[in-house]
Image 1 (cartoon, rainbow, N blue to C red):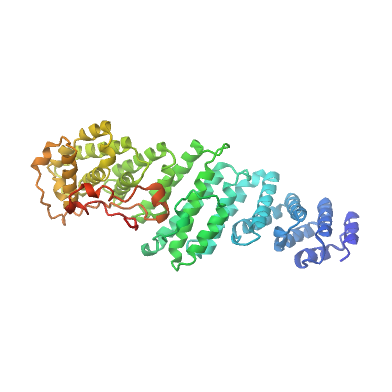
Image 2 (image 1 turned 180 degrees about the horizontal axis):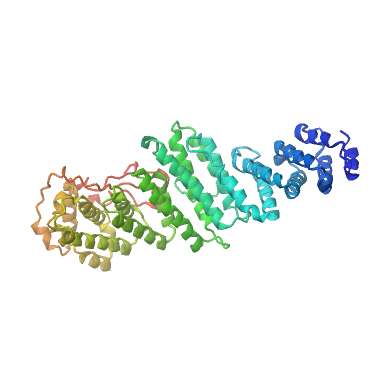
Length: 513
């Protein structure tokens, strides 16, 4: 095709050669130089409004079907194609929807392990920026198109992983001027995808894959996020547990999103943004408990991780779990909230002494008032669960709490004796090791609990009680043990009698002590 003749004809509003141009764009690759193609496209762009509408639509289709230009080494060629697509969207209303579909395909179906991924991602971002700058009113429709492209939970690991990573990279980018509400929608899209995995996949397939050294520090290293992601996916694909890999990948990507999503202009955590992210994940965390009725692998990690970033966030989480338990008493899921609360207070490094003692006080006050309000109650399982949670928290964190004189005094003043002497006899239903541990710690630290001398150390047959407390619901994902959690609860085992060595809460962490 004679490019010079075609350019001359178009400038004269002679479009008899336009079908040849369409054929050139759609099928020929490498037949003409990039410089010639740039000149031709510039000419078409300048005369676009004079081209018949039917040819304009065909031009959009031809460009959208031939996307090799997206990874071209010629930045001028990429810029020219993007500019032409933007002009077509202005002139032909139908072209905007077609271009948006192309954008979704480019943004969300990229293979992150490709050597040309950087160019691919950059060109896709430029197209997005061009559309947003010329069509700010289309931001909502563009985002909706992106979110509706989300693959279902039963899709392959690679499809879910590539989509999730590319989606997160676009929406956390500071170069793309998305409103923060749309960035939250992105996180919610990924969170709901992980919830779908937890609801629909069998529990046996939801265990996190272990032993990824590169994942211990979830905040990352000096490597780029993409390099870390490719390494993660390479390791995951070495396993055959595809279902659990999906959840691991989604959780890792969301954890990587949070700090960057909440970063301020000075690259510090923005409190307002962090709160919005936390409230979103907290809401979905509550939904996951009610939907699954069991431990949540993904949300338990995310909500704890976000809470560890700021003390105020952790306090809000603890209040949420306790209030959810109190409000939902009688509901089948109420004790799951209590179990999470106890597990968080026992295991998270970031729990302060004041916070732990405050929650213990709430629990004990609730236990003290319960018998007066429920004198004729025949089912005291919830009451026994709260008592067990309080005693387990006390035993597990006693070294931390009692090492501070002011907090030792505050702990000693809690009315544990009233629980011990309760008419419902909750102490008698504790596991023998927990019961012995409570007595040992109280005597060792000389806590003023005179009721201990009146105790019967025999344990009742609790088969008719079946206390529903579950002491280890937090995910056993190895990638966050060192970062969020204290050492499994055997560090002070040497201070206890030999027979008490196994009294501690069963550690959900599969690590060697």
